[in-house]
Image (cartoon, rainbow, N blue to C red; front, side, top):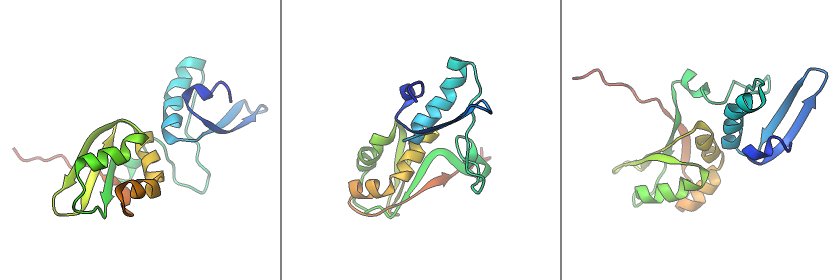
Length: 151
């Protein structure tokens, strides 16, 4: 646990010495993502995302299989008076935001993070986001942007 704590708060560690593996659960997805990228180089071992057998795979890269954006969230049911600054403030706690946009007159917006883990942490905090925005909102990973072939 102490070895993993430098990447973020650890919720649980399960070591299977007979198999030479350990399962580490972090409190935040962002911490898990940073650890998964950093541990192999730091410790000279492999690191993979684990999911219960009953679930679809998850972790960075899992959204692309479903046609979803890795780091971009769709925010629905927004009050029409909310601004991009309001979204920035409501989501800033969860990670580095690279883009915020609101579709005028539609009550929807998009928030893009620099990492998948930050976007996932924000999604998991939907009720807190809604409280920060003053009403319940709908959060989902956004559909991947289509590349236009028009010239």
